[in-house]
Image 1 (spheres, rainbow, N blue to C red):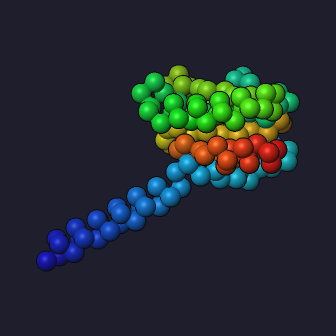
Image 2 (image 1 turned 180 degrees about the horizontal axis):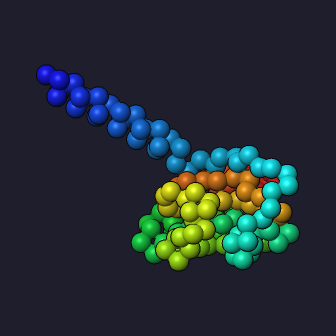
Length: 138
């Protein structure tokens, strides 16, 4: 009987965790920033913090949803040239930067302001409207 109760508790906990994670997928979350934070040299090396907002996303050749992120970013930035720059990094080729930024899953997208401060983060595929609103806030 105890085994059945433990099994039921594990199933319920798994369902709750899955529901929470699914609800967060694709949602843009604002990130608290400090006003005088130093730009990480690894971010500067890939082009973040060069007086223009940056949409940085991590992907991999084996990541199916990453193609959808590319399409969303192209749709947003293609309609407003010069508003921001896109940088796509392969997770397998940039593991230390991914670890520094806390990338736990693919696709993960970051929005940095012109000073190189992380302002927004998305795990999953962002909606075009949410990404457009995040860039407009900069």
